Image 1 (cartoon, rainbow, N blue to C red):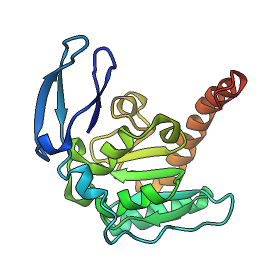
Image 2: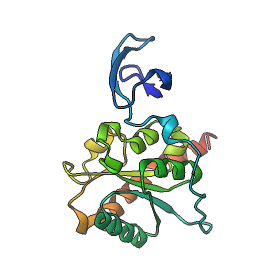
Image 3: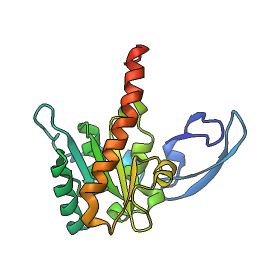
Length: 205
């Protein structure tokens, strides 16, 4: 399990076999000695990422923008599928956290929409969120991630930043999903356009 020290940002790799799924533990950063507290996902990464029974890779036309929907409620899932299709994305639904992680490994999704309680998990132990948070940033920057939950105010930038996602959406704002996502994606693209332009100029892309 990869973690970052919340004080100095040092990257640490903790052995999965020493971590109990669903538990919380504290450790001192070897560099700055700051005490960090980490919650281990309810299902271990090694268990969720197994290739046994993996779904076939999703194939899309050149230039397509696939969007992975990780929502349990059928009504909300269908509403989201229609909303992302209207925005020009190709919706793909995940049946479980295991299914979602296998698909993320095989497909370069442009968008991932995940409910905080997807597959019966909690926000702090959400396997899909955890995987995305520790994904290599070169890949992660190219994926728009929206987190859905009951307690959010849609498009609250501070909540999104605190949870390492691009946008948060209140679950009950179902009639506004298309408008909310359109605005959030546009703002995210404007932000990263500057980043990518500068990276190209200095030869990092």
